[in-house]
Length: 608
Image (cartoon, rainbow, N blue to C red; front, side, top):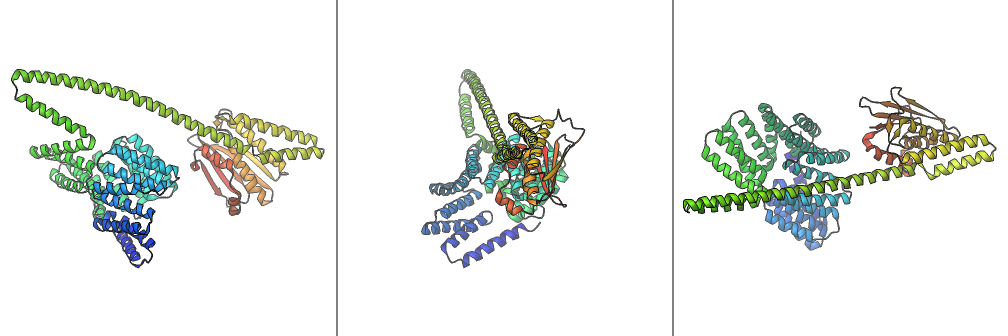
């Protein structure tokens, strides 16, 4: 892996050089914003100074878009260094600028969410991340959609809602795989690894984390590489393989030290401390955990600080230093209250005050007060139970309504796809040309042939209309419809092609079912975009098999022009029927299209 620190330094040097040579204010402002972004992790003072200069220049030349960016970058610099009041002041100024840009507004919501998250308010963070996700989806900003799904998945992981985290991370991974973004895809894999670790499925966790490691090998994404190494070490740590854990965790720490990232260093130091604790070396555990505590305090990451104080209490307790263990336990309780419930702090003070007052009263009054307190606690617990019961009922109702809405939405989408598939197959040009051919046969006196053609045409239309309303049909019925279509097209094109259909004998065609209207769009494409442009006798071979997972594999081969006329075909537009069918089958993963060496195209369709 190349040196990430060197690359970042080179980027900063190049931007500084470009800025010194820039002549126009617009160019200088763009470079200043880019440089401010690079300074976020490495040079707080320079980043803040440059951000302020960017703001002044943007105001001077009236560039609202870059002014808004300058506010955002400066806000993020303050967040990274735990200056949340200054960060909030910057983002308040950014949101006042109306650029009518949903993507820019979505990025502002991200900064607002980061402020909430940094202060331990995960509810507020999640609310703003969802606002950002909604704006990115509305703008078809696919990178941003995947980005937010990763961030939201990470929050659910930290709140131990691992199943929800997995769902968001899988969706994000699919997006970044399509965008060919290994850096962001690795973040999705890291969330999946953390989530499966939380579910105690260590094999699955290591599988995803090792995929991430392979993806990042030789790349210049040191933060993701370090995070993946740390994730693998954490899994081995939880499995009790402390030597293996230390091997990966120390590799991660070495990268973190070169990056001078207090956040990632704190995580690595904390995990290494736990590994030494597992080995019984509590002195080293305390040494590394102390560094984790210092770094967590420096960057203001409350959840890391929480775990570091908890483990400090445990380590000192195991070493017999109960005084320090007690002090760290008190500190842990304070942090936990501020992180999870500020209301609990007031509760503790109230109970303590009552307890101290009761100690000064006479014995009988103290007993009476204790009884009243016990009754109050019972009432409070009953009230809590009632409130929780009501909340549970409300959540169940919301969940049922949500499931029904999702089911209805999915059914509507499927119905629309089926209707589109029907319209694509009942192509007006196809119907018109068929009727034209029938009319021509009658005019030429070929009444028997015309009647046969008319019978096949009517049968095909009837089958299309009947099958389009069904969720699934037998394989035999799908083949019948395809044969009718091929025969009609063969007759209409004056026998411009021959065809064969071969079905694996082990497949029960009557009792093997599939969605209707699947094969015809691909056969149509083979005829009209493959064979007809070649202006030679063509051939179409259809082969239907099943794989070890009992999925149908339909292979359609033609000896047409292949991809030779790709540019021309792009201008003409691809088959709507094919794209609709692809969506019905679940996307491009269900298809494998390649050009044959001997000429023509092969399409493999996988039907679950």
